[in-house]
Length: 262
Image (spheres, rainbow, N blue to C red):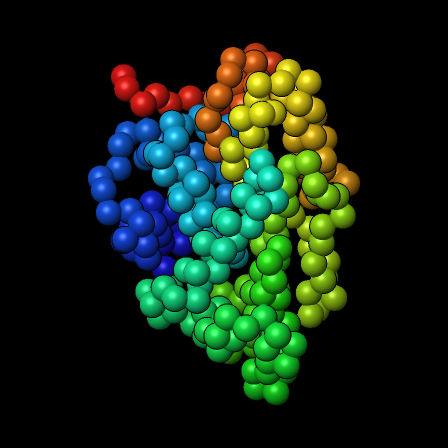
């Protein structure tokens, strides 16, 4: 309960092995920005040096958003679909093997552990005589549908994470809940959405910016705003990351840059 509104405490409490070093001032500022994005919405581009842990924090922010029902549908987008799928694998690993999470979020982790990594068991899995409707595939994770009595006040039944490559199929993503309600992406995390090859090409950089501004921000559906986090590293002046971080060109992205050395 203490972690519900505190992303930093969530990271420290449930993932001590991943965050064993002291935070820098930049980390704390970035964590606060991620927290605000999840809770309040907005578009945030965050430039950090490679190896600074931005992807690790983003993955835990996605879990935080789902487990506390801050966001019911999260989409992870990478420069390639393979890169995004690696992020989903990390989320699955935590839900399957993290004992601290299993103790406090048993209604999510217990049905997942019962799969024993075998996605084929999803189809026939029952809890109290009802299907749990888990999806444990390479591109999608749907959390188990559980009765309110088993959820300790936080029923995240049907909450979903999907993955996609930036230049792949982004439109039309949705999830139908057991209640019949249809949900669409509410939070998108674009982790380093460019390759070195695309960063070196002005035309490819412009194309990626156009995809982000068009297809990605339109994923929530007509008339709805999506929250977005874009952790990135500038490879070349004028590349996609550099352009989106420029508050004069893209003021709504609230771009913020950090340095390796001050």
